[in-house]
Amino acid sequence: MTRDSWSSRIGFILAVAGSAVGLANIWRFPYVVGKHGGAAFIVVYLLCLALMGFPVFISELIIGRTAQTSPTGAFRSIGRNKFWENVGTLTILTGFMVSSFYSAVAGWILGYLIEALRGNFVHFESTNEAVQHYQLLVNNPWWSVFFHFAFLLLCISVLYMGVRAGIERGNKLMMPLLFVVLLILVIKGLNMPNASKSLRFLFTPDWSVLTPMAILTAMGQAFFTLSLGQGTLVTYGSYLNKNENLIASSFLVAIMDTVVSILAAISVFTIVFSVGMEPNSGPGLIFHTLPWAFSQIAGGYFLGVLFFLLVLLAALTSEISALEPAIAYLMDERGWKRHPAVLVCGTGSFILGIPSALSYNLLKDFTLHGMTFLDLMDYLASSFLIPIGGCLAVLLVGWRWGCAQAFDQLRQGSEEMFKKHPWIKYYFWLCIKYTAPILILLVFLSILVS
Image 1 (spheres, rainbow, N blue to C red):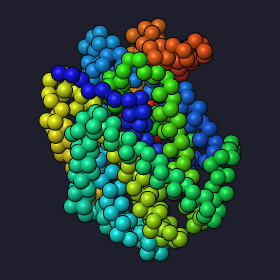
Image 2 (image 1 turned 90 degrees about the vertical axis):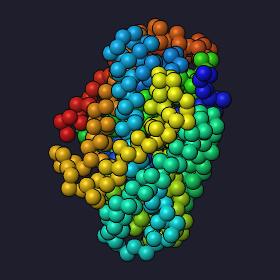
Image 3 (image 1 turned 135 degrees about the horizontal axis):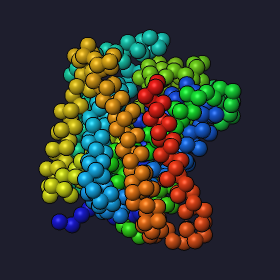
Image 4 (image 1 turned 135 degrees about the vertical axis):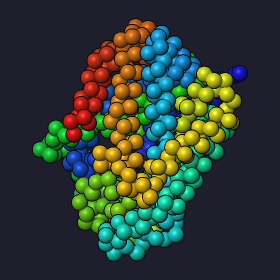
């Protein structure tokens, strides 16, 4: 059976960028920037991205491109023992778990887009009314499960068509559309009152507000923003031609991911400052603060629709990438054809995600250590499985496989870049062997003690 592959470099870049760009960029990044003081946090975040996020990103892509198979087979091929095979399988299970609760949350986004289209975000007179509207919706189990199903159905429809006709073509449509929507929001935001105040907040560092917790949060954001530790990049790398300039393509993806995060922060904070609110609204920014803000500004209906369309597009591309490793596993390791693999994985993700969709209504009293089922799944994946998967991937490349052999693979398609910029070799050697594992360990420990 001929294995799928990307048809073009731009298709690969947009697909991987679609995987990286998600709720972490458009939902989480603005509120952690707001909580931790703005520009100073962004500077630390960019530094952590260079020392930790990008090296792990490259490591996972090298593993996939070299082995040309799913994470289970890729880790087994390079690690050469059962332990590393199990690590590969763990990353697949992590991505599958993420897909289930991510879909439940993304279902709310889809539901909120429908609410915005119906004009339900133009009449709030206070944030309390916006909160009450949110609670009215999520307290309805049928609403939560229906949009969880509808969102997954959209993703399965893309995955069903395959790597080129589905994932690649879908990202070629959705990613440019995402950037167009985001730019419209930014342009509109920059013409609002107090836009200059939001720009000062985002681009003029005040180092006095930078706390140790802010630094640790910046490390975590730099790690989670690139879809690391979930088998996605290994899988996407396995569809890649070995002559592709992996460094150049990956750098473009990292730039796109960073630009989306910063533009999302500009679009959010120009709205927030225009209505006189403080930037530290926290995780409720999307569902509580912004719907009320849309009620207070001219063109709020249009902005609300565009904003939730933007978040939905980001969620769709990330959910697709979270499901693909499990699909690739069934095809590569079990010999399944794509269509039944997609249907089984999609159905499994829907069933596993039902308790998450019901976590704030029928199952709201079912808690463990004070966490709902959705919160527990998120905590297990974000606090343990994803950092462990990412750390083990970089340890596999830097210590088990060895940088010398890994760099031989990395040079394929990048020979001229290594010749012109010899420092690249030393940058990746230092980061893959030392700085990335150490920083991931610090993120992991900070989560444990928090």
